[in-house]
Image 1 (cartoon, rainbow, N blue to C red):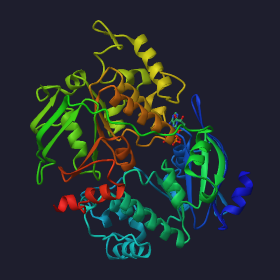
Image 2 (cartoon, protein in one colour):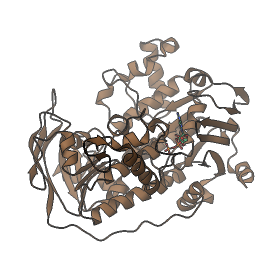
Image 3 (cartoon, rainbow, N blue to C red):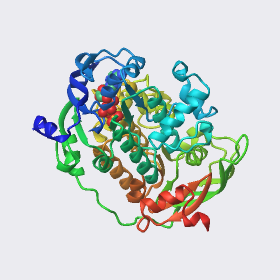
Image 4 (cartoon, helix red, strand yellow):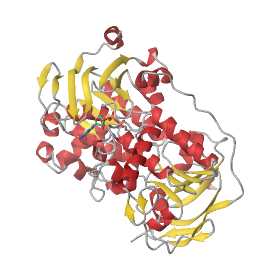
Length: 514
Ligand SMILES: Nc1ncnc2c1ncn2[C@@H]1O[C@H](COP(=O)(O)OP(=O)(O)OP(=O)(O)O)[C@@H](O)[C@H]1O
């Protein structure tokens, strides 16, 4: 079936041909016989569950790690890629999910950094950047400081950087995860321009609706193997998801309100000064009741991370009050706040959520060192921690051989599932969930949503921060929009559309004008 579908799917000549790619890690087959043809002038999406092997494959194609078996052909030439430099030479560029730009430098400086030999660092380079920006409609000014740019513009600088180095094949790793709907549309417009110029785009995404709207071909990877390549016309999002998991999915359901009038978290007049300039947070006031989910919508970098970190006691210099169950949190350390009943799913799982070089069972204890079931008297109870890790692995469907595996060896989505499992353990009264489903596949996303709905039903207060507006709308009882460190609008999720939220988030909404 796959062969036939591929043959009809697109007509462009093949620019990347992957055959029999295999890659093993201890105890895990990450890639096992991957076969993909990417055609010139097309957008080719790669989808699959967490841990299916997408990132591994892209790292192989970008020369970050070698395959154990299989061949890569680029424009009918077999290539061996020992490094990203080799990949770039072969015409492959990659835009990572975490941008790698220096904020205090201009676009020009960022783009030429490391590629000075191409067009120097002055006028010729500027003209080339301008030319690329114009021909692909990127709308980028070479002399702007990167720190002045929003998320969408930064991403376009990353794309420009890759094009500047001559990429004909551009890999994007979950490019829309950090964008608001308007920015997503812009990005897709840019990708169409790349296509029109005969470039090929490979992009990894968990957002199947987007994949269906923008891709020419979609390859589904399941457990390291290419299951099928389809065109958007032959499948629905649901069928695509079922191809990914190899079985049928449960349907999401809407829930009735469980909000009570018992106040759990009260934040009054919260402020956080910045070392210089505009405060990071200003006059933030909100309440969350038992059984209520408060969603915070905002473009990245508008204070949501600072808000969460202030509530968790990770920031100094805050003004205003934070009370949990009428207890003032201000004198308490982060650990005491956790022990006082806050579950915390952090935004950056690598910085705050996990010790990557420690086994999963140690990560189970992290931040919960003084709590059941991890301790017996004053001592860590390894056996109990390990057993509880096994419980989380099974309840949260963490795909891994067992609790002794290092956190680093888990795929991004599986790391996230482990953190969610840990933070939901230990009976919190308040759950702070920052981007709880970032990077997880649709199956895991549905499971995490269920866990959050359960938490709400059990009477937790939930503070949900997310860049996924459908997620915010689907889970929240109320949504507040944060812009430049202030709450600028309050919305009823049953009435608001993602577009309206997107406008308020960028300061274009009527609520802000008023
Ligand atoms: N360096 C590594 N060491 C050990 N195992 C690894 C390593 N890198 C990846 N793996 C394993 O290989 C498998 C594939 O991981 P990969 O990151 O490619 O998945 P993915 O499809 O990108 O997942 P996600 O959607 O969660 O990002 C996973 O089981 C993962 O745990």
